[in-house]
Length: 281
Image (cartoon, rainbow, N blue to C red; front, side, top):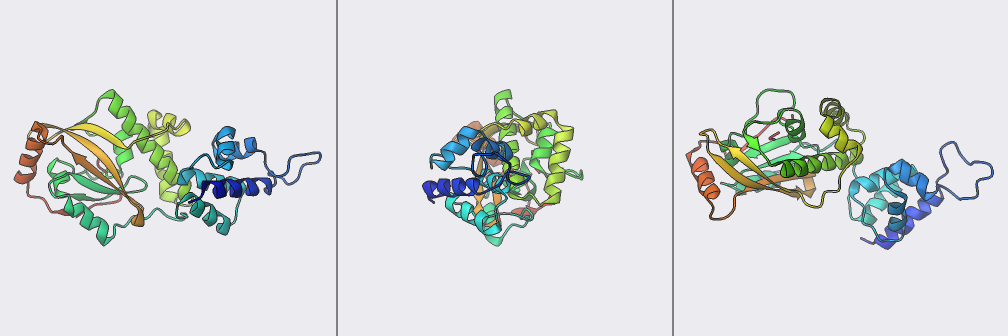
């Protein structure tokens, strides 16, 4: 990855991209102004300046947004992605878990964990998650984490206001990044439209996204027998399949760890269960 090369490439493409409508009489600036590119890509002009100076490492979503704003060719898009350290993405969000991803889920054993695609659709859960009562009903989007969080939250999962705000911001930020990388995915676009029209909180985050530094969160789960267990959630990327693994762990040696162990040992659940694309909240 070379940020200086990436910055130089963005600047060259900007200076060789005509404004919409073609050349304008009397215009002295070659190509697009930084302010024009910033507006089209949904970032600030200062961000574009720092990027062109090799002082910013853009997310995969920002790279895609800039490439779309500059109307670059597929080859130029792939080059920008490579310079930023990403694989180029388009088409449909991958919704299949490979053998290695399923094996990873199995290895967590007595630790609740589940896999989601880049649109937060759960695609597989492990037995420890099911032991917590993590099954979904037959609703159309019951297996989508963002939908369950913003539109149909589970009563068995509680968070403090601070943790809830952080969790929601992380969900919206990742979903926004995914929508930029997969602009042709109709199912993803439909999900975002439904979330925005159903949840004012999601729509606010979508229009004014917050910077998310860490994808860690704490929640209290009420088990089927009425016990409360506090668990910390961590997000692990599975790059080859463009999946995410959500892993929930208690504090070592805590009463929560003891209760979780009892619940998992008492359950009779499969090691891994593949679920519908429509997740745990």
